[in-house]
Each structure stands twice: as C-alpha cells, then as structure tokens.
Image 1 (cartoon, one colour):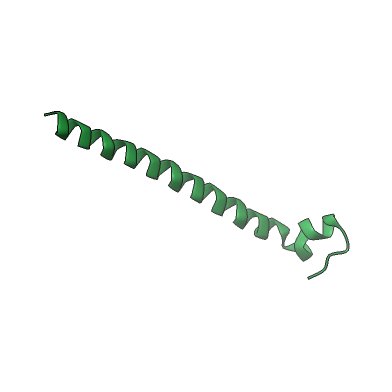
Image 2 (image 1 turned 60 degrees about the vertical axis):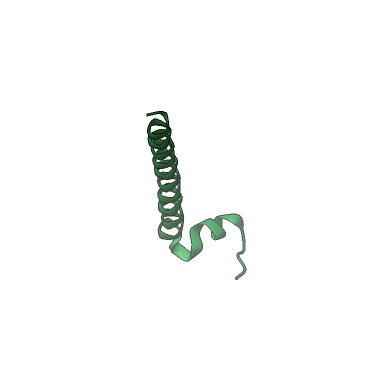
Length: 54
C-alpha cells in the first residue's frame, strides 16, 4: 500500500476515523487491562503478606 502523502495515510481512503478509532480503543483497552492486572497483583501480594504475618 502506497500513499501519496501523510494526509492520505491518515485519511486511509476515507476510513481513517474507523481505523484510528479502532487503534485508539485497543490502546485504551490494553492500558485498562494493565492497570487492572497491576491492582490485582498488588491485592494478591497484600493478602499473601497478611496470611504470612498471622
């Protein structure tokens, strides 16, 4: 795939909104998953520490 210019690349033949919107939604989902995993790991480690201490 060759584009004539950067604006043509970003436009994606008139489908740029959907293409880049999909990438944006994916990025948001991945970031949310990483934050969720980090919080779950922190909670699990905290629970293990509490079990070990008691």
